[in-house]
Length: 280
Image (cartoon, rainbow, N blue to C red; front, side, top):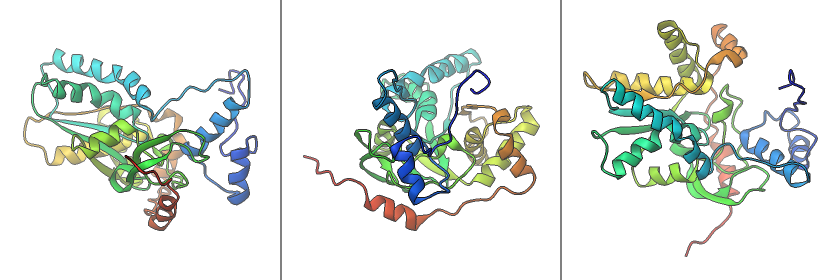
Protein backbone atom coordinates (compact mmCIF):
# COMPACT_ATOMS: atom_id res chain seq x y z
CA UNK A 1 0.00 0.00 0.00
CA UNK A 2 2.81 2.39 0.86
CA UNK A 3 4.51 1.53 -2.45
CA UNK A 4 1.46 2.96 -4.22
CA UNK A 5 1.37 6.10 -2.09
CA UNK A 6 -0.81 5.19 0.88
CA UNK A 7 -0.01 6.09 4.49
CA UNK A 8 -0.40 3.13 6.87
CA UNK A 9 -0.84 3.43 10.64
CA UNK A 10 -0.81 0.36 12.91
CA UNK A 11 -3.95 -0.13 14.98
CA UNK A 12 -4.51 0.89 17.72
CA UNK A 13 -3.30 4.29 16.57
CA UNK A 14 -3.17 7.71 18.27
CA UNK A 15 -5.11 9.14 15.32
CA UNK A 16 -8.58 8.19 16.65
CA UNK A 17 -10.32 8.64 19.98
CA UNK A 18 -10.82 4.87 20.23
CA UNK A 19 -7.14 4.23 19.53
CA UNK A 20 -5.99 6.87 22.02
CA UNK A 21 -8.23 5.43 24.72
CA UNK A 22 -6.88 1.91 24.24
CA UNK A 23 -3.24 3.05 24.11
CA UNK A 24 -3.68 5.03 27.32
CA UNK A 25 -4.82 1.86 29.09
CA UNK A 26 -2.51 -0.56 27.25
CA UNK A 27 0.46 1.19 25.59
CA UNK A 28 1.79 -2.11 24.20
CA UNK A 29 -1.58 -3.32 22.89
CA UNK A 30 -1.13 -5.84 20.05
CA UNK A 31 -4.37 -4.65 18.47
CA UNK A 32 -7.22 -6.74 17.11
CA UNK A 33 -9.71 -6.81 14.28
CA UNK A 34 -12.35 -5.41 16.66
CA UNK A 35 -10.17 -2.38 17.44
CA UNK A 36 -9.34 -1.81 13.77
CA UNK A 37 -13.05 -1.83 12.92
CA UNK A 38 -13.73 0.76 15.63
CA UNK A 39 -11.00 3.05 14.30
CA UNK A 40 -12.17 2.66 10.71
CA UNK A 41 -15.80 3.41 11.62
CA UNK A 42 -14.76 6.46 13.65
CA UNK A 43 -12.60 7.72 10.81
CA UNK A 44 -15.45 7.36 8.33
CA UNK A 45 -18.07 8.85 10.66
CA UNK A 46 -16.00 11.96 11.36
CA UNK A 47 -14.88 12.63 7.77
CA UNK A 48 -17.23 14.00 5.12
CA UNK A 49 -15.20 12.53 2.26
CA UNK A 50 -14.74 9.01 3.69
CA UNK A 51 -16.91 5.92 3.45
CA UNK A 52 -16.52 2.57 5.21
CA UNK A 53 -17.22 -0.77 3.53
CA UNK A 54 -17.45 -3.80 5.79
CA UNK A 55 -15.22 -6.67 4.78
CA UNK A 56 -16.21 -9.44 7.16
CA UNK A 57 -18.69 -10.71 9.76
CA UNK A 58 -21.98 -9.21 8.54
CA UNK A 59 -24.32 -11.43 6.60
CA UNK A 60 -24.27 -9.56 3.29
CA UNK A 61 -20.47 -9.96 3.18
CA UNK A 62 -20.79 -13.69 3.77
CA UNK A 63 -23.24 -13.97 0.87
CA UNK A 64 -20.94 -11.92 -1.38
CA UNK A 65 -18.13 -14.41 -0.70
CA UNK A 66 -20.21 -17.41 -1.77
CA UNK A 67 -18.89 -17.11 -5.31
CA UNK A 68 -16.08 -19.31 -3.93
CA UNK A 69 -18.44 -22.12 -2.96
CA UNK A 70 -20.45 -21.81 -6.16
CA UNK A 71 -17.25 -22.27 -8.15
CA UNK A 72 -16.23 -25.17 -5.89
CA UNK A 73 -19.50 -26.97 -6.66
CA UNK A 74 -18.82 -26.69 -10.38
CA UNK A 75 -15.17 -27.71 -10.00
CA UNK A 76 -16.12 -30.79 -7.98
CA UNK A 77 -18.68 -31.74 -10.63
CA UNK A 78 -16.00 -31.49 -13.32
CA UNK A 79 -14.03 -34.29 -11.65
CA UNK A 80 -17.11 -36.30 -10.66
CA UNK A 81 -16.73 -35.76 -6.91
CA UNK A 82 -18.73 -34.32 -4.01
CA UNK A 83 -17.39 -33.61 -0.51
CA UNK A 84 -18.03 -35.78 2.52
CA UNK A 85 -16.43 -33.12 4.73
CA UNK A 86 -16.10 -29.36 4.23
CA UNK A 87 -13.55 -27.40 6.27
CA UNK A 88 -13.05 -23.65 6.50
CA UNK A 89 -10.87 -21.49 8.73
CA UNK A 90 -13.10 -19.15 10.67
CA UNK A 91 -12.47 -15.77 12.29
CA UNK A 92 -15.33 -13.42 11.47
CA UNK A 93 -16.76 -16.01 9.11
CA UNK A 94 -16.71 -14.70 5.53
CA UNK A 95 -14.06 -17.13 4.28
CA UNK A 96 -15.79 -20.14 5.82
CA UNK A 97 -19.23 -19.05 4.61
CA UNK A 98 -17.89 -18.37 1.12
CA UNK A 99 -16.94 -22.00 0.71
CA UNK A 100 -19.58 -23.78 2.76
CA UNK A 101 -22.84 -21.83 2.37
CA UNK A 102 -23.55 -22.90 -1.23
CA UNK A 103 -23.21 -26.56 -0.20
CA UNK A 104 -25.39 -26.02 2.87
CA UNK A 105 -27.89 -24.29 0.58
CA UNK A 106 -27.96 -27.39 -1.61
CA UNK A 107 -28.64 -29.47 1.49
CA UNK A 108 -31.55 -27.24 2.54
CA UNK A 109 -33.01 -27.42 -0.98
CA UNK A 110 -32.48 -31.20 -1.01
CA UNK A 111 -30.09 -30.83 -3.96
CA UNK A 112 -26.98 -32.19 -2.24
CA UNK A 113 -25.41 -35.25 -3.86
CA UNK A 114 -24.97 -36.90 -0.43
CA UNK A 115 -24.78 -36.21 3.28
CA UNK A 116 -21.75 -34.22 4.38
CA UNK A 117 -20.18 -32.74 7.50
CA UNK A 118 -19.23 -29.07 7.83
CA UNK A 119 -16.44 -28.01 10.20
CA UNK A 120 -15.50 -24.44 11.14
CA UNK A 121 -11.99 -24.26 12.59
CA UNK A 122 -10.68 -21.33 14.62
CA UNK A 123 -7.55 -20.46 16.65
CA UNK A 124 -7.41 -22.06 20.09
CA UNK A 125 -6.39 -18.66 21.49
CA UNK A 126 -9.49 -16.90 20.10
CA UNK A 127 -12.25 -19.54 20.12
CA UNK A 128 -15.53 -17.67 19.68
CA UNK A 129 -17.49 -20.62 18.27
CA UNK A 130 -16.10 -23.27 20.61
CA UNK A 131 -15.92 -21.20 23.81
CA UNK A 132 -18.00 -18.07 23.21
CA UNK A 133 -21.46 -17.15 24.46
CA UNK A 134 -24.40 -16.89 22.05
CA UNK A 135 -25.64 -13.39 22.81
CA UNK A 136 -26.14 -9.87 21.52
CA UNK A 137 -22.87 -7.95 21.48
CA UNK A 138 -21.08 -5.15 19.68
CA UNK A 139 -19.17 -6.08 16.54
CA UNK A 140 -16.26 -3.84 17.52
CA UNK A 141 -14.24 -2.98 20.59
CA UNK A 142 -15.26 0.69 20.70
CA UNK A 143 -19.01 -0.08 20.68
CA UNK A 144 -19.66 1.89 17.49
CA UNK A 145 -21.45 -0.82 15.51
CA UNK A 146 -25.02 -2.10 15.95
CA UNK A 147 -25.54 -5.10 18.23
CA UNK A 148 -25.37 -8.50 16.53
CA UNK A 149 -26.46 -11.85 17.92
CA UNK A 150 -23.52 -14.17 17.63
CA UNK A 151 -21.09 -16.39 19.45
CA UNK A 152 -18.88 -13.86 21.20
CA UNK A 153 -15.99 -13.75 23.65
CA UNK A 154 -16.99 -10.20 24.59
CA UNK A 155 -16.24 -7.06 22.58
CA UNK A 156 -13.49 -5.99 25.00
CA UNK A 157 -11.63 -9.31 24.70
CA UNK A 158 -8.06 -8.83 23.44
CA UNK A 159 -6.88 -11.91 21.52
CA UNK A 160 -3.26 -12.96 22.08
CA UNK A 161 -0.89 -11.80 19.30
CA UNK A 162 -1.05 -14.99 17.22
CA UNK A 163 0.13 -15.04 13.60
CA UNK A 164 -3.36 -15.23 12.10
CA UNK A 165 -4.59 -11.66 11.95
CA UNK A 166 -7.81 -12.37 10.09
CA UNK A 167 -8.84 -14.95 12.70
CA UNK A 168 -8.18 -12.75 15.76
CA UNK A 169 -11.74 -11.51 16.19
CA UNK A 170 -13.92 -11.69 19.29
CA UNK A 171 -17.19 -12.70 17.61
CA UNK A 172 -18.60 -14.85 14.85
CA UNK A 173 -20.92 -13.87 12.00
CA UNK A 174 -24.63 -14.09 12.95
CA UNK A 175 -25.53 -16.56 10.18
CA UNK A 176 -22.70 -18.92 11.11
CA UNK A 177 -23.57 -18.63 14.79
CA UNK A 178 -27.18 -19.51 13.98
CA UNK A 179 -26.14 -22.55 11.93
CA UNK A 180 -24.00 -23.70 14.85
CA UNK A 181 -26.97 -23.31 17.20
CA UNK A 182 -29.25 -25.45 15.02
CA UNK A 183 -26.61 -28.14 14.54
CA UNK A 184 -25.80 -27.58 10.86
CA UNK A 185 -22.08 -27.23 11.46
CA UNK A 186 -19.42 -28.34 13.91
CA UNK A 187 -16.67 -26.17 15.38
CA UNK A 188 -13.14 -27.03 16.39
CA UNK A 189 -10.01 -25.10 17.35
CA UNK A 190 -6.34 -25.49 16.45
CA UNK A 191 -3.24 -24.25 18.25
CA UNK A 192 -0.83 -22.01 16.40
CA UNK A 193 2.02 -24.54 16.28
CA UNK A 194 -0.22 -27.37 15.04
CA UNK A 195 -1.51 -25.07 12.32
CA UNK A 196 1.98 -24.17 11.10
CA UNK A 197 3.14 -27.79 11.27
CA UNK A 198 0.26 -28.71 8.97
CA UNK A 199 1.06 -25.78 6.67
CA UNK A 200 4.69 -26.89 6.50
CA UNK A 201 3.61 -30.41 5.54
CA UNK A 202 1.35 -28.94 2.85
CA UNK A 203 4.18 -26.83 1.46
CA UNK A 204 6.49 -29.84 1.21
CA UNK A 205 3.90 -32.03 -0.49
CA UNK A 206 2.04 -29.51 -2.66
CA UNK A 207 4.67 -26.84 -3.31
CA UNK A 208 2.55 -23.95 -1.99
CA UNK A 209 3.43 -22.06 1.21
CA UNK A 210 0.08 -21.28 2.89
CA UNK A 211 -0.94 -18.20 4.85
CA UNK A 212 -1.33 -18.57 8.64
CA UNK A 213 -5.12 -18.46 8.36
CA UNK A 214 -5.13 -21.19 5.72
CA UNK A 215 -2.87 -23.31 7.94
CA UNK A 216 -5.79 -23.74 10.35
CA UNK A 217 -8.00 -25.24 7.64
CA UNK A 218 -5.16 -27.52 6.54
CA UNK A 219 -4.63 -28.72 10.12
CA UNK A 220 -8.31 -29.54 10.47
CA UNK A 221 -8.35 -31.28 7.08
CA UNK A 222 -5.47 -33.46 8.30
CA UNK A 223 -7.44 -34.29 11.44
CA UNK A 224 -10.47 -35.22 9.36
CA UNK A 225 -8.36 -37.33 6.98
CA UNK A 226 -6.98 -39.39 9.86
CA UNK A 227 -10.48 -40.52 10.82
CA UNK A 228 -12.04 -40.65 7.34
CA UNK A 229 -13.17 -43.83 5.65
CA UNK A 230 -11.39 -44.91 2.45
CA UNK A 231 -12.58 -42.92 -0.55
CA UNK A 232 -14.06 -40.03 1.40
CA UNK A 233 -13.58 -36.54 -0.05
CA UNK A 234 -12.45 -33.62 2.13
CA UNK A 235 -12.80 -30.12 0.70
CA UNK A 236 -11.11 -27.07 2.25
CA UNK A 237 -10.32 -23.59 1.05
CA UNK A 238 -6.65 -22.68 0.66
CA UNK A 239 -7.53 -19.03 1.13
CA UNK A 240 -4.09 -17.46 0.86
CA UNK A 241 -0.36 -17.97 0.37
CA UNK A 242 2.26 -17.16 2.98
CA UNK A 243 4.43 -14.77 0.99
CA UNK A 244 3.09 -11.82 3.00
CA UNK A 245 3.69 -13.64 6.29
CA UNK A 246 7.39 -14.43 6.15
CA UNK A 247 7.98 -13.18 9.70
CA UNK A 248 5.54 -15.81 10.96
CA UNK A 249 7.18 -18.57 8.93
CA UNK A 250 10.62 -17.44 10.06
CA UNK A 251 9.51 -17.62 13.70
CA UNK A 252 8.11 -21.12 13.12
CA UNK A 253 11.20 -22.43 11.35
CA UNK A 254 13.49 -20.96 14.01
CA UNK A 255 11.46 -22.57 16.79
CA UNK A 256 10.28 -19.23 18.21
CA UNK A 257 6.58 -19.69 17.52
CA UNK A 258 4.65 -20.30 20.73
CA UNK A 259 1.13 -21.41 21.59
CA UNK A 260 -0.77 -18.89 23.65
CA UNK A 261 -2.80 -20.33 26.49
CA UNK A 262 -6.55 -19.85 26.31
CA UNK A 263 -7.05 -16.76 28.52
CA UNK A 264 -10.11 -17.88 30.48
CA UNK A 265 -9.91 -15.11 33.09
CA UNK A 266 -9.72 -12.38 30.42
CA UNK A 267 -12.65 -13.86 28.51
CA UNK A 268 -14.69 -14.05 31.73
CA UNK A 269 -14.13 -10.32 32.25
CA UNK A 270 -14.95 -9.56 28.63
CA UNK A 271 -18.15 -11.62 28.74
CA UNK A 272 -19.22 -9.71 31.83
CA UNK A 273 -19.30 -6.59 29.67
CA UNK A 274 -21.76 -7.94 27.09
CA UNK A 275 -24.88 -5.72 26.89
CA UNK A 276 -27.94 -7.03 28.72
CA UNK A 277 -30.59 -7.54 26.03
CA UNK A 278 -34.02 -8.94 26.83
CA UNK A 279 -35.62 -10.76 23.90
CA UNK A 280 -39.38 -10.77 23.59
